[in-house]
Image (cartoon, rainbow, N blue to C red; front, top):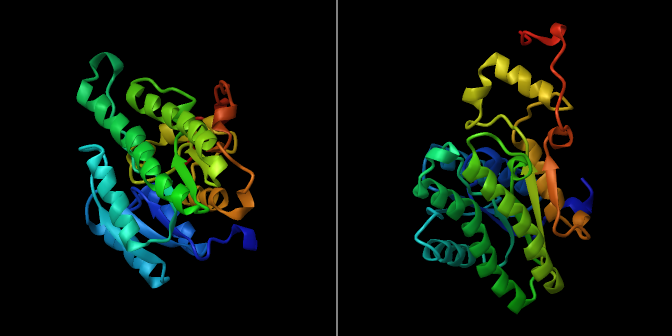
Length: 272
């Protein structure tokens, strides 16, 4: 690994990092030399697993729990204060915590939409603001990474709340870049396509759906979340010093393909 891709001496808070994409990012940051504060909704088996993995590499800076969806801004303020108390030198923030709860638009209730926006949009905005005020005052060379989604650009039926929230995240990356770049704070985003995680595995167990999603992705792959971790390291490292306000699509080319042709007969039914 190039030295400019290393994160030695840095400490990261990764929200929602006990499973899936968040845990993969926590591991990747640790492998690049950073200390990591793990955050999760609760102290459960997955939290224990990632904390033990980081401890085995002397990379665990701390573990925090808390529901970032409210009440606001108190829940966010508590997390920020606790993270700063654990690691006064906190200088990396990954806003990954989010929810995928959704309903058809015509049936959607306010609570579903409100919780989605609070966790996917407001929490990252407020946490970044809270930490950035301190970073600006102390002239800290800090970096922020928001985890968006391909759904921020490509809509899915019956995902109105989620798609709307991820579209907001992409614009938030840009507007916070404009506000914070003059202070030496870099803000970028990472937008995963379809990864195989505990959340998506049940749907991908359907061989016809899996085969269609592979066909719908130009490189034909549905990877695990580790590819997000490697991309996160790059965006947070010195190697990306001139990249500001960018949403990096990590989707195998799916967002570039307007409308794939139907698969040929010899590609269907699904592979064994």
